[in-house]
Length: 407
Figure 1 (tube, helix red, strand yellow):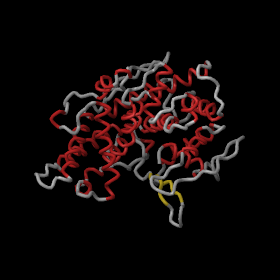
Figure 2 (cartoon, one colour; figure 1 turned 45 degrees about the horizontal axis):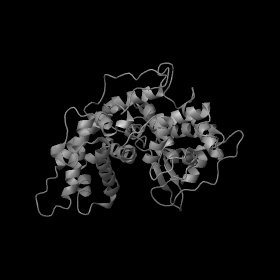
Figure 3 (cartoon, one colour; figure 1 turned 30 degrees about the vertical axis):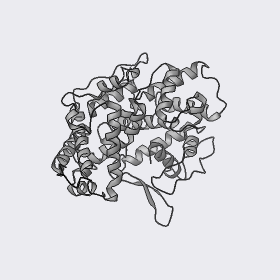
Figure 4 (cartoon, one colour; figure 1 turned 90 degrees about the horizontal axis):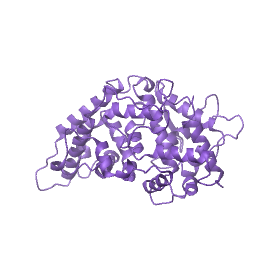
């Protein structure tokens, strides 16, 4: 389940008092179903109905409730009772199921800035026409109310940090040592992001070394003749270094030893992932009323975003599709690294056997997705060790050269 799935679940099943979260003047959301197979999620119609709900306070309260659910102790899980035995949908045992890398990679497509420009244009003029589908107007109104108004409870925004984009940029740089692939915030009156002294500038080098070792281990799975050059010790060592690097910025050494709300950058991470998930969903399928209204139909979310970027005068990253394909998988991989899963020699052995242990296949597939799309999005060679760039590599620099239209 992604962020929107979890928020819908919170609205229906995690009451503030009793029963579903109530509205003062609209009917309580009802009629929602969940797919009875993994991965568990609400379908597109359910999600669209929710994000276009006539009372945005329902959504706002659900976001607040979900934030609390992630952070309480002892931890809970979201469950759905298909049978006599409840099925766990999302487990918060080790804190948040989200990772800032998902937001960072998604935002490099320029999706937030493009939609912000689109909403600003719509609210001030009629360049896009007047929508005939009421869901379009509700989505625009809800988006403005939830993500661009002052005082929303789940915004890391104040007089000290007036620019949400600058705050996200600061968080990205601290955790990954990375800039976005385009310039500073363009909104008039917003302060530029402050460049922090404390940052994980070595993250990108370590991560690419790790991905290279993973690829070598995967190739060796079917190597029945030559020597198996899988370096399990190096895989474990690199995973450990990455875990320590990321956990140092978060302010803890053992995951789960404190509430998520007390972790450094937790607030920024939660908001950033929610924001990028909200916009990505609106363009995630071709029959979306938002896609239809903006006349941006195409085969992929990346192509749709390129069309919208051209309409509003903010070109999307040319590698947007690879960035979207990369975002979720990268989040899963870094979560596993931070939890120490990929430092377990037994897990590594089970993953890199022929055939791999079924329990390890989802994470292995995520790793392969990251490797394939990392090369597409950045131009960095992961599969060819000799061609790797090391030392002073910065993804943002190669992202610019790979997609000049994004600058």
